[in-house]
Image 1: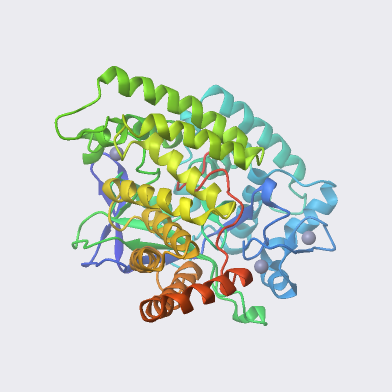
Image 2 (image 1 turned 90 degrees about the vertical axis):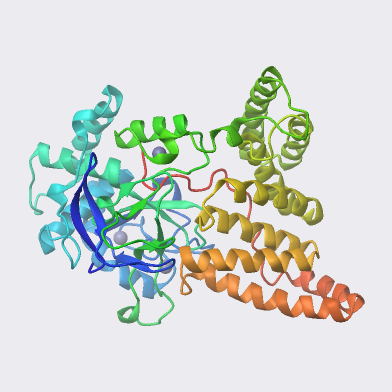
Length: 486
Ligand SMILES: [Zn+2]
Ligand SMILES: [Zn+2]
Ligand SMILES: [Zn+2]
């Protein structure tokens, strides 16, 4: 924690500022987290210790609920699970994710005191709960959770009053950090990282936060490195400058970002990008080509049409009707392309869905074209070192590679690697995958330049084995918010 200190950020309450100059890719701080749990709907697909998605998991024989990659992960997770395991057995069922996280937090505090992580910039008691700001419906749910929590909480654990339990639920609600799987593609759980809670929001931030799953491959769980978050610098940060992250994805117009932030985190964003409505026009505007420009009416009409189509696409995708998705996307694009800007959010959304689904259906060449348009649009909107941009560029690169478009594919993979080295660091599993792909595509590119025929026959053989298949079944939604709202 020597790179930051707590200070009073004007208009924002507490914040963290740099105590020395930092550069792109520097780790501002890293933090292991106080507790984390797997989401209810992910409980059968993710290891409850390392949070990796696995095909095959082994159930805890005691509670029949927790699942692990293997005995090593089970042993590594036992400390966190031991009291929970007993409580589930006694209770006779599994309480929901909020209750499980609250319980894990309180057991941890009971054992180690309310001293958060090794460096205590804050305590659990001092974190904001915003219970007073909660709307009526949320308060009702909170009451139900508290009631069920009290039923679940064992008699022989330290007892707490209702106000304190309500504070803990409030803290989880507005500070619970989304924990992703090892590929960073899907949110699989939620955890509490108290020092991270001190980092304020900016829509155009100077830092990003990622989850590093640590090294779980050691056979002896003693040698496992811990799951932790890293706050990483996206560019130069001067001494004394506040460090900030984006709580919501930048790809929303300013009024929408402000609405989300208010609803979820109870504050009004007054960052430069919101105040100046920076890039709002690019995200919602019409196509401007020399001399011609669609009328406002036309843009409005196509925008509304897109919104309806996107709903249909989402539904077809959830039903796994992928050919239907492709049909809808193509129809929508045909209307969008002559009217909307190439950075229009609804067009980018369609391009993203279409390229992803076409890749899954193995129409790589067509997918590659759309992926490229999507990445071009993202590049015009996002900060050059944005993690979402890096991930999208990686996807685009892999799609080109699979399509045999090795030159562009290699170029995009290199670009993605450069971004992810800053946002994820070279020890992160995704960066390692990317490095391997970069080397592989570089070799293939050389082969292609020497002899195209040899290259194409080799590629066909390689595609049959699918050595590095990144094209998982399309997931419904990428992680767009930093902290989770129920
Ligand atoms: Zn595991
Ligand atoms: Zn168990
Ligand atoms: Zn803002």
